[in-house]
Length: 367
Image (cartoon, rainbow, N blue to C red):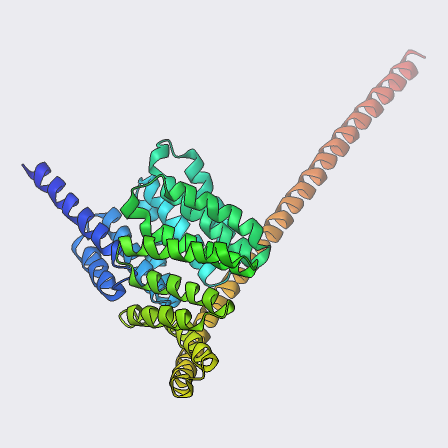
């Protein structure tokens, strides 16, 4: 009876986490609240505490508060040693790679992505790791976009999309929306407006499946960029106003900044100067808020780098002293070896001398 009640309670918590995960891009504050309740009410269940912290971290990432997101991700990571759930470990390590990508610490991000990929390869139930592998490929693509080229990035994003499509349609819809949106941005950089617009429209469709308003707004903003480039300013304004309506419920500063900038540019192009001034002022206001927040994120990123540098220096120092100790020990052994050899030779010489002396004494007596 107790076992059944425990099982039922687990199913309830799993269901709550699933629902809250779908709210990350629509109502992140509620997701944070739910994650906090899960952590609070599951003191004895390490796996649920990890999942609760991960949910909070994801919600803060959605709000672009990467400092807070990292804070709760670290709390989740600190508990990993207490669980045997390999899939959960993959999930957290993958998330850590994503977090470092968001902080633009790309070398560290790749280290965690490589670690997660190795665990994914070793995981026996292959049908369970499509989503994690999809995220791994997608983030690699975004890093390659920054560090290498969009052509390489698209190849990895496509691999991620292919893995996502193997999962449940509604569970992966938000991830597909993000991946396809970023693919659209790559097509924009490659001056392929047709494929970019197709990608943004597909991203909108995926976002609507799970009512992910911020993702839908981003995709609409992407479509507006294509319309602007093609001189279709009225259509761009329409898409941007729709995006702004959706974004008002999410309060994503980066998204708002880009929407206001786009509206100002397009209103200026159609000579609606009053609307241009209104949106230009809002753009400047949001831009200032973003710069204030970026100082915190940059400080956090530098802190990560400094901590990593200190750890490397400490490791090198430890290696140096260890090597010095080994060399010292080796030198002692060599000295002891030669000491023993010399002492042995001295004994042999003394024995020979005694033998010669005895022989000489014997001959003298015989004479």
